[in-house]
Amino acid sequence: MKNYLMRPTLRQLEYIVTVARLGRFGLAAETLNVSQPSLSAQIAEAERELGARLFERSRASVQPTATGTEVIRRAQNILREVEDLRAAVSGGVPFGGRLRLGVLPSIGPYLLPRVVTAIHRAQPDLRVIVREESTQHLEQGLTAGRLDLIISTPEDHPNTRQTRLFNEKLWVAVARDDPLSQATGPVRAESLSGRIFLTLDRHHRLSRIVYALASDCGGIVSDEYEGTSLDSIRLMAASGAGIAIMPELYAMQHKDRKTEVAIRPLAIAAANRNISLLQRASDSDPTGLDLISGALLSEVKSLGLS
Image (cartoon, rainbow, N blue to C red):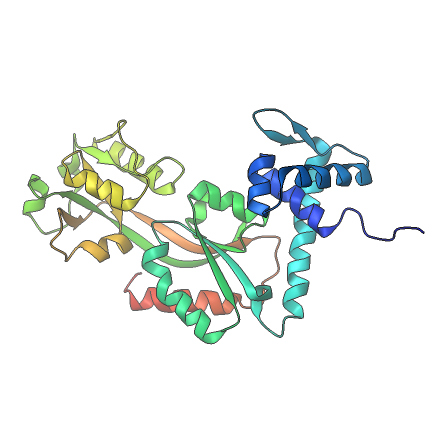
C-alpha cells in the first residue's frame, strides 16, 4: 500500500533547523529531548526523501551544504507558517499560546517582571518563555525562528521590523574609596582619562559602546577581565579593578542603596543606547503584537525612561 505520509515531516524539518542552529548533533538531540541516533536517523531519512545531502559532518561541527542552506531557509518559513496556523485556531490566544521572547540580560530582570504579569493578566492562556541572551545570540535566535520577538539594540538587527521602546543612559560605578565616589553630579569625559573600564564580553553591544567610550575619554578597556553579568563587573569595580559602565535600568536598582560601589550618571553624549522590540521583517504582524508592545511601553513610562 502506498505511503501518503508527507516527507519530510514537520518533525524532521524541526530537527533540520535545530541542527543548523546549534551546529552539533549531540547538542541538538539534547535540546530536542531525543537520542542522538534517533536524530541522525531522522535527518538521514529526510535527506533520502529530498535526494540531497543537507549537512557536511565532521568531528568538530556540522555545516549546511549549499542545498542544505536553502532547505533550512524554507523549513524555517514552513515552521513559522505552522505556528501561525496554530495561533489562528487556538481560540484567539496570540502566538499559538506560546511567546518565545528573547531579551538582553542587562534589560530582562529590570524591565520584564511587571510586563509579564500584565501580559498574563490580559491573556491568561498565553505562556511567555523568556530567554536572556547576548546580542549576537538574540540575532541568531530571531533569524532561525527560535525566538518570536526580541528586546535588543536595533542597530544590531538590521533586517527587522522595530518598535522603539526607550533610550537608556549609561552610568558609572566605582569603589567607595575612588575619588569619583566623592561627588554626586554627572561624570564628564575628562574625569575618565587614563582610567580602566570594565565591561561584558564582546558578544554584547554594551561592550562595543564601552570600547567607544573609553577611546573618546582616553581610557583603557581591561584586557584582564570580561564580565559575564552586570553584577560581576559591579563587584570587580568594588574591588578597585576599574570603573564599571552600567545601563540606566540596572543603575536605578542600585543607586540609592548603601552598597560597595558609588553610582553616578555619565554626562557624555555617546553614553546611551537605544532599546527596541524587534521581529523578523518577513513576518506579518502576529496577533498579540500590540499587547506585547503596549505592556512594554506602559512599563517604560512608569519607570520614567525616555
